[in-house]
Image (tube, rainbow, N blue to C red):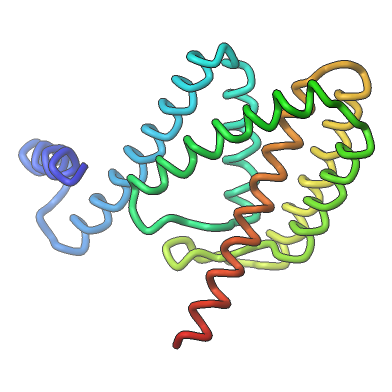
Length: 194
């Protein structure tokens, strides 16, 4: 990844798109790295969706996951490779859980998941990342909690009406809340070690 980023930066410098000022290079390097990593994540999720014959599920997953994570925060891997791996494995696990739940469907379990994940988001959001500071935490908390509750209600309505896309939405929300809890546990562990 670093080689590709360096080549893109060299191309931009050679074409006078950016200057060679170190602060500017660092800014563009970070932006290019984030963009490439995000693009790789999206491509991987689409590939998994295609292989699993769940392309619509991959689209729903990406929309809900990206939206909720940008508002609520959560665990962030320390390398782009780990990030891509964790996101891909999370989506695969989500598809496995989806298959299990659809075979052994229980509305009570669905409602329990919806309530639990909504409580977690309401209590823990937003979880700030050192690379992505949050301006107004109160605004992020309100928006992420409202979105979590709205999507939970929508997912339950969809499930009751026989549309299992609602289950993908709900499981994605649950995954986001798990990543939030994991981030808080890691933060707590790190504060005890320091």
